[in-house]
Amino acid sequence: MNNEVNAEMKEFWNGEGGKRWVGFQEKLDASLKPFGRATMETATLSAGERVIEIGCGCGDNSIEMASRVGPEGRVHGIDISEPILERARAQSAMKNNLSFECGDAQTHGFETSVFDIAFSRFGVMFFDDPATAFGNIRSTLKPDGRLAFTCWRTVKDNEWVHLPLGVVANHLPLPPPPGANEPGPFSFGDPERVKDILQKAGFIDIAIKKFNAPFKVGENLDDAVSFLTQLGPANAAITEADPDETTRTRIAKDLRNALTPYDTGQGVVIDGATWIVNARNS
Ligand SMILES: C[S@@+](CC[C@H](N)C(=O)[O-])C[C@H]1O[C@@H](n2cnc3c(N)ncnc32)[C@H](O)[C@@H]1O
Image (tube, rainbow, N blue to C red):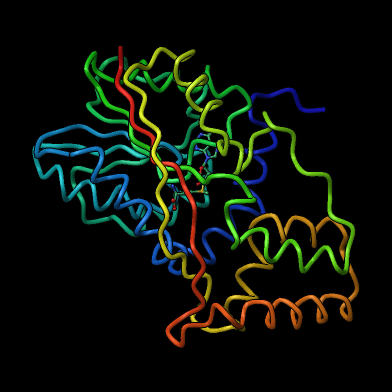
């Protein structure tokens, strides 16, 4: 057994998870943009400010924030995945006020009190010990520094997850759902848990607000089936059961039918349900 902190997530994001994230990068950035931009608005970035992005992924938000803080400002992205950062670096080669670093935000030896803002779009739900991780992130914020991130609400709140899972469940046994405190994309669904984590980490003025936006899961039905069976909990269930081709084809056909009501003609669109969380260093 590997006792290293965040070992499972490190392996996932540097392995198959990272490969898929990079493979779907353009689609993901287009679909997730509204969530990141809405969170950025709450961060109220000003020219000259210094921002750290946690779990920055392929850099879409870092690039945008580097434009917003301008040449006098600076954005630094940290991510645990080398292959994902490779894409971020390739996308942002022309930005002088933007840098990326591979590291685990829970344990990384950050420079203390240097950033005005810590930002994340769906990059902070994967820590073994979230209170320690957020304490570490807080250490790199200036005394009056701000935290702004978005995270998914529960699986139940997010039809783009429970609809495909329901289809898969008609064909395969689903793995047991993750425990309430286990790291993963939906581990911050309970706002009381998020508040408790941030309080333990020393943040104050914690505000947690619902934010819903249309989430495009595909340009058309086939695209949506491919996306929803290759990423997220439905993919995890299929990967674990490893069914034969006939079962995979049946799942794809049923999912296509189930998604038909969401096909707008300009994409297959389902509501995404998130929290936008803001807090301040104490
Ligand atoms: C769901 S992806 C989101 C990526 C990006 N923020 C976006 O919205 O496109 C989660 C990201 O968090 C990163 N991550 C997971 N655990 C991390 C950790 N402990 N420290 C830093 N990054 C982490 C992953 O490598 C991945 O890039």
